[in-house]
Image (cartoon, rainbow, N blue to C red; front, side, top):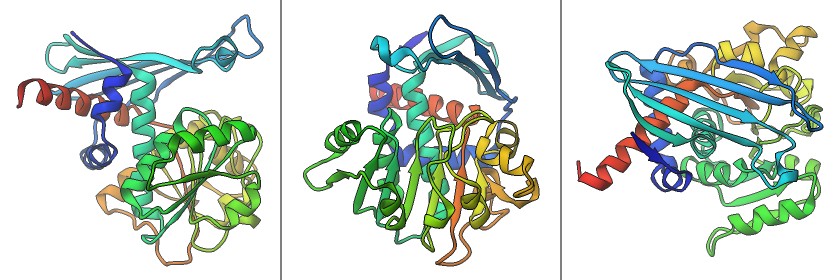
Length: 318
């Protein structure tokens, strides 16, 4: 069994290739049971979350990701998300690879948002605002630059120092990234807003949204978490990564439905619909679009297969 480190995953999972692999996987589909989602008490201030995410494609591969989300870890100098992904032979069940799950998750999550944006954002979108300063932020910047002509990037966070750090680390000689302290003004001037926080109260307001903006909500993965208020959901043409996952776990979807703000029928489609051409994405230039993701094991399986394929190719030339 091959052990693949986070550095190796980062090196081989190029965003443009991963976006296309995800597009192919959503078109063809695979077996994806709803993930196990468990709250685990800890001795810290916050409970941990245990996620178990299986998926398989008959005759090819079986994959399962086991990760924990421990909000108190950063205080001890540890990552919030830790875990591993196991890829097994689909015919024999023999493990073929053990892969660093946090890096795999970061790469595929960013690629899934970029995939959605390829259908939902304006094709001339140049200004990206990233809300959040965690691990995902630089991956999001990289992924969006692969599918849109992004020229200006702003980063906002509750901690201005962290926003400055993310901006500094994401800056290249030809592609500067800046931090901002004015979230409302940054939203009003953006073409795309991508939220990568663990907020439980909305950060983005519907009355801030300019015409034509695309709003990408990534951070929330439980019904209690919110990154956008009801106005965002009401004003936008709403898509999700998977209907099953969003209707069970996405607070930005579940709570507006429970409060009667929207109904499940108001969800225009998911990534299966978009990649298969079942539903159109952006219908007109000034339309506001919203994409809410909670993650799916389909994305993990696609990313794991690509990572192994790339490493084998590098080592053998095949």
